[in-house]
Amino acid sequence: MSSNRIEQLRTQIRLRIVLIIAGLVFSGVTAFPIEWELQIADSWISEYGWDNLFSHWIEDAYRGVQKTNSEYPFIAYGSDWLGFAHLVIAIVFIGPLRDPIRNRWVVEFGIIACVLIFPFAFLAGYVREIPIFWRFIDCTFGVVGGAILFDCNQKIKLWESEFNALLTSLYK
Image 1 (cartoon, rainbow, N blue to C red):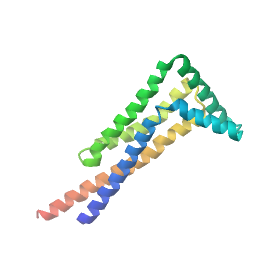
Image 2 (image 1 turned 90 degrees about the horizontal axis):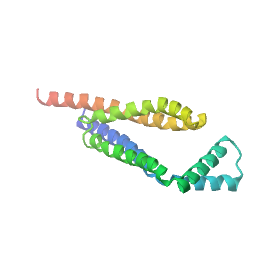
Image 3 (image 1 turned 30 degrees about the vertical axis):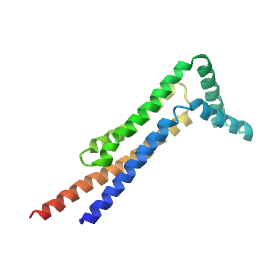
Image 4 (image 1 turned 120 degrees about the vertical axis):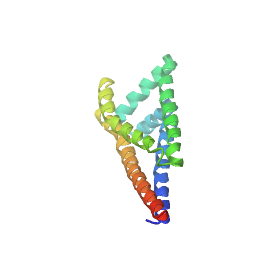
């Protein structure tokens, strides 16, 4: 394999890691203004007269968050920590962005986290009475993130083997 192909793999790996970082940052940042986001969604539901399971869930969630924030604002601190955790995990992915081979463990950690979304969403969702359709929506993060990271991990392994083969051929 040529050094050109190795560079192509590195670019593909970086693109996937940047997507994961962007997803984590977006997810983290949107955890902070949850009441405002639900207020917008609730306004759209009211404006367009939606009447379905999804719209009822958004209305209930908005009322719950609004009431909790007005009476017990410190509870929202939990969502703030959730957002913070997403941002910190995004920072960890800078390692494989810089050196994918040495930091492949971060990508593998991400795959494990994506797999663990499923039991967590279904168990905690059941306990917290989250509608089943919303638990499936939460699981899409595991499916999409897991697919991106699995592909990234495969490309890192390929890059490593091809890079090693190239080095071996140069030193023969």
